[in-house]
Image (cartoon, rainbow, N blue to C red; front, side, top):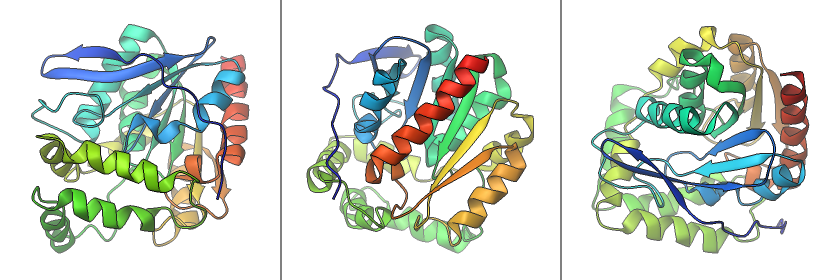
Length: 277
């Protein structure tokens, strides 16, 4: 198991939206990098990556999704497009950035880069959902909706999470999973999580051909969310003119499963594109 350094928690700040607040924090100095976790996750999903980026000379902003973590649970809509709107508002306030998006957040990042190219220097897409999976049939969507219904959503996610960490587990996996599940089980946060699981990625896929920023696709070789992780990474790279880094012994969260390798890869990429910009 990996046991890298973890950045201490900074003071939580808030972006005020019409229906609630989006929580984020800021660390470091230099060009801006925005870290966005995926569905059911917390901004501390990047706890191992943040120290590396700060040490490399970047201002690192990590944010919770709406209805997750320290963000409010009062929103009426969740998913790719609402997340993209939140990221756009945050970057409008903080300035242009490199966006690092994991899972669902990768789709939201693609939408922002397509619709607001002036706000996005480059994209790092980790385990990215930027199109509807081939397995996403109406029957499978119905099954997922039942599985992630409010009465048992937290328990189902707790049982499912270990499968997403195929390969090396982070040294703090048990405590981190407990933190994630406690967050979901809070009043009305289970509802927000359940609604987030219903998101679709059609808008992200339609936005791919309009992205002009440099793109790095980071995919765990054992990512169980994709029947063929390497094939999915290649498809995305072709669609978006990006480069690929496949991470051995990692599943859907390579940033916390192989943090030293992923931190080095992302730091080099971000340094390259920000210097060029």
